[in-house]
Image (cartoon, rainbow, N blue to C red; front, top):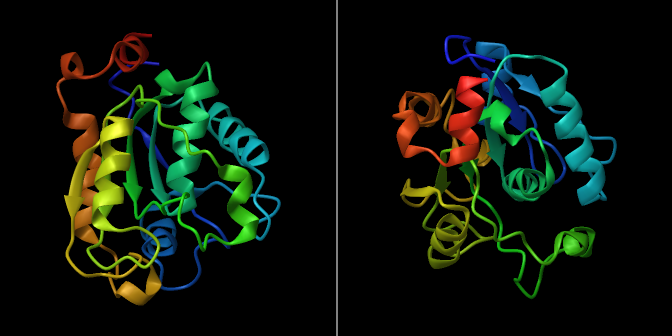
Length: 197
């Protein structure tokens, strides 16, 4: 892999997948991004989801950008903490991660506890909403700090999903693409090694 290869974008939906009108679905159709499909969207098993991400990443030798929503953000953290191939990722946009320690967390998601708090080995930007029903702003900033990601608020936009009315969400796309423009020497060692393979 070389830095001159244009990265592809892997879309990582959250629990129950991303439906029509969701910015991930719009990006899939507008930009040709690849959605990482899961065998079970209703009862997500963390290990199974990690395996699907690994397979999708290894299916193409080009570097990748990850665009994750909701539970997909926790997938990125869990996968990166265990994969030997994290250097293939040039950056991750982490949008609206839920707080997995909330008392009313749906039972389908209990298997994702405890949440992975290891710093990501690649550049990341976490985007959160001031009125997300699944994660308070201070919890979102705590996640960003643990993962070594920059944190951006987009104001009161709910769970930053189809109901948020973002359309093609050009601002989010710009944040994603900006991750590959960072100076490689500002990145963690694993990411720098990936750029030079």
